[in-house]
Image (cartoon, rainbow, N blue to C red):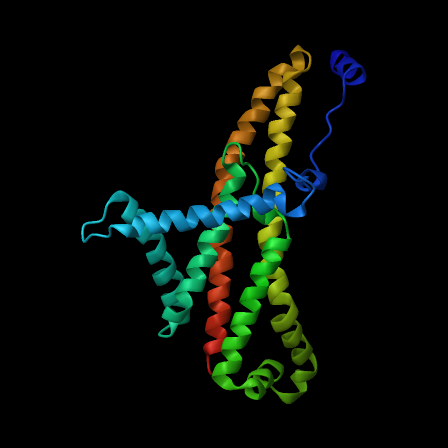
Length: 262
């Protein structure tokens, strides 16, 4: 114990990761548009476009492994997220849902890719923008199908509810449809990516710090690295799950807007 205290007193103490580690400076120049998150988002668009262009360029009845991978992702979004949730009108929403899922998934996975190692969705501005797109789309769909008067009326006055209950339910429904949905949609994605990346930083940087300490701390460092590796696999599952949840909720909101009573 004395050797550990002496190490802390003589050496530099461990500075734990914080939100400041997510505020990255421009990679070149003095331009806010050349920061790592912005460049990663641009890279994700290029990678997604190239991948699906190549996988569909020489489509065959017996698909290659590359074609099979691309078709599997598309079929998953088309069948499991669009058709099963939205119903018979699902096809016109497949392009948006497919783009949404692949975009979020790619930017999430960047958090565990060597040398990149930063999930772009840990910057809340990106989930906010995606939630705004979803917000506009599902309200537009509902208004176009039912007309603005009927659509807003059914939000404010839920059918089949005693009139006295509207005093409580109407404000709740208005807040839910116009504030809670976009906020929870974006903040859920942001919070999971932020917290997961922060935990990885704690264990990896902490293990590196312990490795530079006295012999007692060096013996502990492998456990920190082991936790970091284990969390990396767990984080991969969370990254995939969050892309799925965001897309699933978007499909559910669209399905609700298309329903005769929502």
